[in-house]
Image (cartoon, rainbow over all chains, first blue to last red; front, side):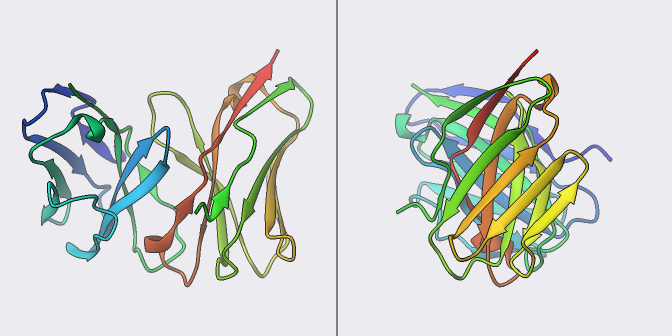
Amino acid sequence: DAGVIQSPRHEVTEMGQEVTLRCKLISGHNSLFWYRQTMMRGLELLIYFNNNVPIDDSGMPEDRFSAKMPNASFSTLKIQPSEPRDSAVYFCASSFSAETNSPLHFGNGTRLTVT
Amino acid sequence: DQQVKQNSPSLSVQEGRISILNCDYTNSMFDYFLWYKKYPAEGPTFLISISSIKDKNEDGRFTVFLNKSAKHLSLHIVPSQPGDSAVYFCAASYGGSQGNLIFGKGTKLSVKP
């Protein structure tokens, strides 16, 4: 089992550019979570999906952020246009089901720097 | 308003001694608590959990204690090893949903040889 795979590991971009972060779930997992980690706010849930359906996107900071699950094993988080305050580490995590207490399995994150 | 608080940003312990990491919460609805461990440049990894119907859960060197009346939980590591040096996150949820999982900001543990 390869675990949750995120790409890229690092992304440096200029303000105003579009950024796309990618995540591959663990095979057999049905729920997908996007988190953002900053020094000020810690780990915050942005959005989560169950069986490819977005369940709660109330953590998405602005309309500039969007997330999709084009299939059961893959997700993208897009920021358009990006701003310096979006700089953070973005994690995705998967689990068997969002409606259980089964632990989340995190990827190694994407460190985003917007200049 | 932080619902899950880890008031100690860092902790230093000698190898072989006990490490005690603390976590406080404010939401009475929380009924499931977890600890995650994170090494630099990696994602958090699940360590141990406890349901609110219990007050203790043990897994090898790791024990989590829950005091519901005080809204407090702690993670004990005995004996501490240098490989335990990492950031430890406390997290809490309710209603069996990971969608409301709230993380603390973490405590960085350093275990010195």
